[in-house]
Image 1 (cartoon, rainbow, N blue to C red):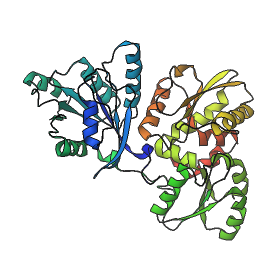
Image 2 (image 1 turned 120 degrees about the horizontal axis):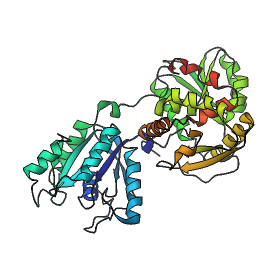
Image 3 (image 1 turned 90 degrees about the vertical axis):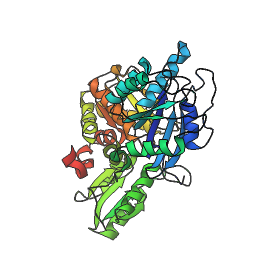
Image 4 (image 1 turned 180 degrees about the vertical axis):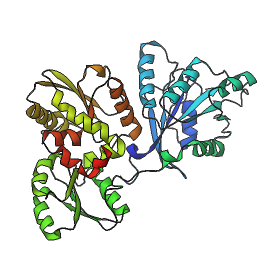
Amino acid sequence: MLGTTRGNRLHIGVFGRRNVGKSSLLNKITGQNMSIVSNTLGTTTDPIEKSMELLPIGPCLFIDTAGIDDVGSLGKLRIKKTLDVLLRTDFAILVTDYNGFSDFEIELCKMFNKQKIPYFVVINKCDVQKPTKDVINKIEEYSTNTLCISCEKDENITYLLKSKIIENVPDDLITTTNVLNGIIAENDDVILVIPIDKEAPKDRIILPQVQTIRSILDLNAKAHVVKETQLKELLDDLKEKIKIVITDSQAFKEVSQIVPKNILLTSFSILFARNKGDLKTFYYGANAVDNLKDNDNILIYESCTHHPIKDDIAREKIPKWLKQYTGKKLNFDYHVAKGFADNIDKYALIIQCGGCMTNKKEILNRISKANELNIPITNYGLIIAKCLNILNRAIEPFIHEV
């Protein structure tokens, strides 16, 4: 609760063949036995994640993956999970050893380049045998950033490896963007409308709301937090001082009827569409709802696992609003938590959640995949605004961006 959320951490993936020392390396970096280490091939099955602070970079999430050379039917499933990790990786460490730089490593390098993932190569087990000149030359065809280490003897890890990571992570991956940059200024008054309903966590408010409050404070502006039932009274008290009202998307319709047209209005989810996704693409995706036909399939990406409850936003409310708006019979599928849905070419529309628990890299890759297949993609806030006929008002604060 006190740390940076995983979705806002720099994701560093550790990749390579089986038994080159990926798990040992992660254990050394974190100073904990996070991953099981064994001489048995294929010991790592599911990706293993560890959050830590890597100064001066800041909050990071290290991810240990299964070997890219895994075999058999289970091995194929492990490789798929490894490739899913690749699609949310900001920075990669490719681990190999003195045995060489094979087609598996070369294929990983090609994937890193395709996904525009910066990376460097670590050659492990250098205490057993130094890599030959031929191996070094082969590696340098794909990366000039290499480091020889020994996880067994803890050589070149504590200082050199961490320094190598710090040196090679691009500045733009370290710098975070305030979700309200360009929208509010110092001393502006901002109203946040936060309904306390069945989906509100007990004794807490949800992550996008917390992060928005922090964003307002970081910009030296003033946050006024109310429930929708108190909104009109607060607007009357503050008169014309309010710069923008930000609401939970589920209260969009009620709030839009209360807030005067001269005051900007948007939702938490749309703020995150702008901050973690591609607002322009999401905007056009929301408008593509007008082209839906009977029996079209719609995929909804949920980035965090939770037990669906009555009036669940993804399982009940969005499907209901879409059916009411379009008047069509629509089919809904769901992909929960990390990773990417299979066979998305069957969908006429993809709807991404706000993404507070997912990093920007994963959402952008989902957008890229949808664009490749010419499938419209949008997010919760924009699709709700569209169905309630207030989309243009909801994106007015960012109209120059769409």
